[in-house]
Image 1 (cartoon, rainbow over the protein chains, first blue to last red):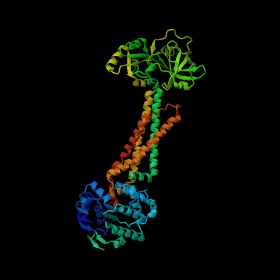
Image 2 (cartoon, each protein chain N blue to C red):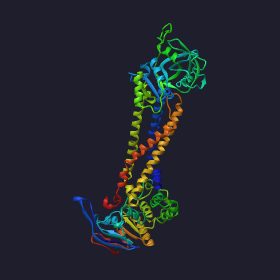
Image 3 (cartoon, one colour):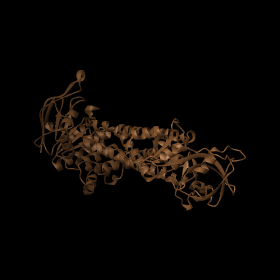
Length: 224
Length: 375
């Protein structure tokens, strides 16, 4: 399992506001490795996540996830890839308002057409794995920022994704929680041997990463 | 569907509020529909139950023809002599009476020839009989007001005394219960001068209209020719309802109210779902980012709208029916199951149409907004 970006160029905006977010980017991300994307705001971290996660089609280049060129897929195929092959943890707004922790995962499962009943045990296992077995019936407004991120991580792992994409996971949590959350992401990556890419400004995450890509200077993974 | 139901459960307060509005709109539409039918029945049920296909009025009167127009005996004979046509004279007059037991009633005197197709079948007592010209068959509303078979009924100010010989089902004209009398008696009621000491010896041989049974294949040219021959204007039975006092005005009023309700329903539902969709745009973006297809989000939104609109409409229908049962026969309210079903189906459809106004926004939400790049 691997993720290869070949000569990827992405421009955003229209007319005068059109800017090049990624220009001829080549990068390879290995399975079982947590890669931290670092760099200042506007350096293209989120754009890289969007392209790798089949949210955005590049203007040029190829995005190969285990041999499948995500850039060449139709909208419907890309939605399917996001549903079945890719897990996301966003910086904020990860959870559906009013749904309990368990229902957040059930809702994600229902998108794939799987029968929720068959996944209940798995959902509880995952919530236990992220340390929230006692929070099954809690809604987002009853959870801390760190707990919300851990539920999002459990949801992303539900269908054993080939690619795990995480956007600024520790932006809204304190240092202790940042360490815990980063450790969880790293363990999930190593245990499942999935490709994990984390966009971050946080040295805690960078320190825990197996490789780092500095989007400003050297968009090629280097050992941490 | 699971996701739609989970969201419904999570936002049950908002959906209950919206559902309550749909319930009230549906109930209001149902109640207005009940009054429309009930008032219509109360105005023209005597005409509606006539086993006639057409009504011939005297030519020259365009409104309130039963009161304004008169058909003479020659015209009546002429229509009776038409081939393949059954014709019988009809007299219609609004008056008042008092029974021997002191019950005062308003009544619409319907003059019909005993034994003719326009004569009513009786539920109790005996039908009208030419040999007993003072007989009267009263409708159920008059029975409800206290008129009984065997009573005498004196027409106020005219001094004409009638014998109640039978009763028939619900029948009213211009919101007044009907009493069926012979055409001879009707002519006495119609042409006697109120307060006169003696009844006129020679009553005009005239009637309000002719009730006709025409063959189904009668053409308009044929009908116009017959009208020309007899000096009449003939209209299908349903069009003759407009000749009843106030019928058109009532229909227009009630239909206007219904129309406004049908316009309000989709706007209210549409406005709610528009606000709901705007509020959850970030969540729709999250679902899209997680791989939900546009089709799934569309189905998901429509399912939520269907649950709210259909459940609200069903409860509204039950409420309207309950109002119907509660008011009973105190007011002119009639809501047959078929009318209720049709009306409620229309409410549900316009409600769903309202929610459809928001679908474009649902399908065009951008999953990229979940990432920092687009924030």
